[in-house]
Length: 558
Image (tube, rainbow, N blue to C red; front, side, top):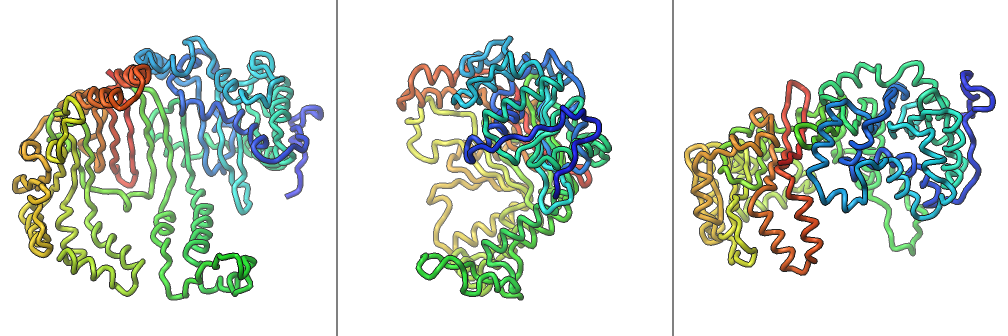
């Protein structure tokens, strides 16, 4: 691609600057770190971003990027008023966070991150307050844009408040970082667009003005499915699949030997050399199945994905929605099963078992063993008929849990039976028990010898090393009515995957005590205590709504 002329809307003296040559290596990418720091900042210390929320505004990065954007991650340090209030309420619950980060409530997060990114000394001549703050905005994004080439063009969109000052200030950052000749940018009214060539930067800025990503119907749809925007937002377009397919093709060639018609690339004349000790990848025969065919097929069905990280309900949550993933997601709801666990449950993981789970496992096993010898060996050793018996013993859904009866000290655990842990297999209990007995008879090993207690009723089989806990799991519990669970998994009723962790339990005290006894300093234990005490629960849930897959991750506080 030849270098394009600067956009006509830029005056001659405000054309996108061309950087000088600089050494390759770490310094080359420092500029990316400096500019993208605003994006990454919230990931590491997102809670403190709330104190920067009180000022700023303007258009979102997606309004400056073109509709052909393949993927983008953006940060917004000026979200809605509700976000600001929830963020501040959440932050104030963590006394250890401010101490560990060295931040005060009135600190500018942008300055904090800039100082951290430049503490190595590469940009000593740049002062944030004098050279950066006067022009930098409070929104930024990085991503990739389809410009018709073999690979998408990388892009950074940085909100600016003063074009002239941004031109000078950004140039100084790029110069000190040694960005090199490839790194170029274009300056619009509200955003600076940087990419890997002058032509790319100019084209992205120009195309974004003609038709922005924010106006794209698919972008609107998937962000609508993900819910209210938050501090961090991300999006992957359907058009990303064509690039991912190319990556998979290359992966198949490198790892599995490519296809039969790729043999010319490995015909013995490889530059590896006879004495290299390395051999070229094998060439996959034409009649060999493509080991990545299933992944590629699912990729073809992908419709798009969007998500957000936001403050809500006294905590933080990650929500995302995607289309075309229904066939790889469980479809059996497990919310009722998890809700029926004992009220003091500390950890739970439950998921529906797909009707073809055992068949898929068996087929996958066969793909790596065309002769079938290994599969036959497994059947002979454990006495199962695959895939039928495996599907039966997996049931309709599985629930793994840990009870809240923690020992005062971990040294009190003398054996596996002292741990209140259990697995519940939901389904036809008689058939499940029949397969278990079949395995025991064939192998000569009884679960009771391990020891594992087998309990349950007509609709579930409970396996646990603890008889007391097995009895608890055999009864209907009330976890579903516990506030911490409801806060963490608000959509439990329709969820097909649920993970739950209760921070406010005796296990937390036991683990802190163990950390102190195991050599951790009192200060470290206190810091851990300060930063975990406000936490109430963590919930991860997933469900299908038509052909849309949803995932919600929630961290709730007391």
